Amino acid sequence: MTWIYLAVGAGVAGLAGLAVLAVAGARVAVAARTLNREIAEAKAQLEPRRARLAARGDETTPPAAYDRG
Image (cartoon, rainbow, N blue to C red):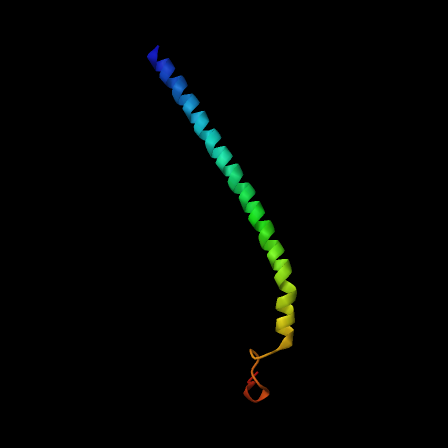
């Protein structure tokens, strides 16, 4: 009879462990989705500035005398 109790206890403990892992996995998935959204927002804010700087051609562009291209 003790073996039955031990088997049931181990089964319940296993299910509880799976439930804890499922909750943790769900939290990680939500955090990853939130991070992805924040990265997309930051990229949307920075892209126009990056394009403007790239089109400006300031001191990062070499003078024509040094232009080997």
